[in-house]
Length: 337
Image 1 (cartoon, rainbow, N blue to C red):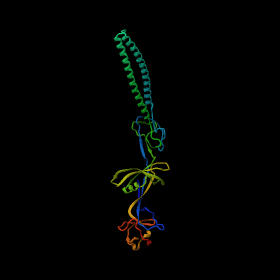
Image 2 (cartoon, one colour):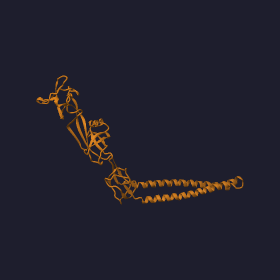
Image 3 (cartoon, rainbow, N blue to C red):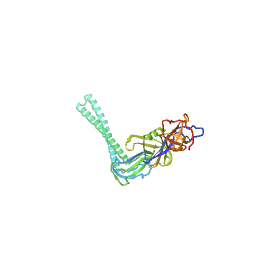
Image 4 (cartoon, rainbow, N blue to C red):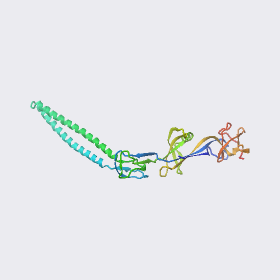
């Protein structure tokens, strides 16, 4: 990150030149600080497969914007065979369940017939118990087939989900920033396949001092920056509360909101801030400099005060603060000599 500080440049809270009829007063002076950073993506994701296999398609190249198609496709031949086998097992199981259900229906009728004859003393209890046992076993077999079907259904759902993992996708609108495989490559679980990034919005990392951060936070929710020479709106994305004891700075990030051109990394972003210098600003017409001794004169008391000039901008001087000088004090215009 490049950071440019112009220590001798100043900006004023009030206009730098006096208009006709305006009072000649002492104002607060601010130092102009220019912070420079470079855009980068908001989010970066490394793509890795959850299944092993042979790459059959790579649908995007570096720089392409992701659409509906998956980024990379892995061969589905073997998982397709397993899915087909599971579906055939389910079809066979459905046939067995239909057969078992028909058997239960027959045994229920047979048991009811024998039970009626037993109540009429026309059939023995042994035969009735045997019919009941056959019906009970048939019902248990039907329940076991239902459990087996549910297990196979779970297996099929898992296989279908595994098949989806053969198509590695990323959010639409993101940009491919890295590609690590080509069609025909065999990949294992966790192999780096590529990298995608989200540049909407772009962000700019900066490191700022406490006064600079305070000045940023005093701005409205949005403020103007120059991105690639284009004026844009920006806002604070996040502020890291961890203080860097080496640089004496806090890490923060700006979010660019309305960049009109193609969004990408590495575009220069310039942010200008006005920081309180602790000094005062006075019109040049209020300062005399005879014998290399700068002075100002207070209008209310007529007292002349020696001052130290720190710099100048436009039609105003920046002077060091003094005990007898107050913000808003009216000065006598003596002219500049």
